[in-house]
Length: 302
Image 1: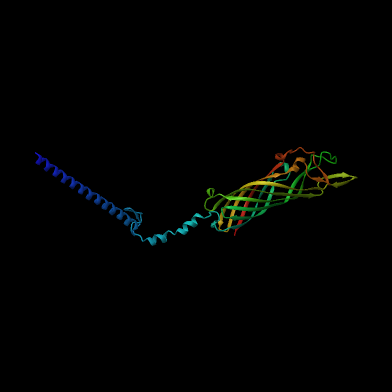
Image 2: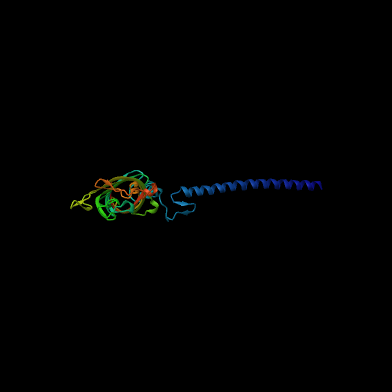
């Protein structure tokens, strides 16, 4: 019986040794197989065929890597990133000067007593990197008309009758414009911005009101000169006809601090002020007068 038990124990020991050897062989075999798979994958990536694992990228044939490098130059991708769709230039590296001649209309609020009229002007615009434009505008109405009346205390005629006096009104403004690429498409650019400036008035005309004095006829002389400060906001659309020539339309809303309008009549007749005593536009907010500007622009870019 003991001999049988000893033989069984010997058999079990041999079987255990065989199992251990088999496990070690399988372990090394698995590692060898894994290393072989990795080598295959590296060879696929490093080889001349442009592919990921066992799939190519749709070229359908092996392509030399030098040809792929030449077909997609990375430098061109950088320039596309910096492309300015409005000016067709690389604004990361270059400035542009825009000179604009414009015409349109100035529409004055009632308290200024100035007739709506056609305006002509020019603009110098420095477009700096980052889609920013610094704009200087000057607009002129050399044929402007100002509505005037006699004061209520003037007994020489009907104080309610009005006349138009000829003169000049001009405005000079400095603005900061911002180009918006999200609201622009190829060939059409959207600008918006704000700024401030000066409005200058110069009206003088004789023979305005006729009155009878000493059996004859006399005429009154009307004079008005003043300067106001202002602020404004604007939007503008520009269309690229050619790289150096653009046309566009714009709208600006001016807010003028015209404190003289508080007097009602802010001009002189024969050197005498025609104020009606004040209170017409009492306070800073009431002293604000508006001018709406619509323009048609013709620009040359350098």
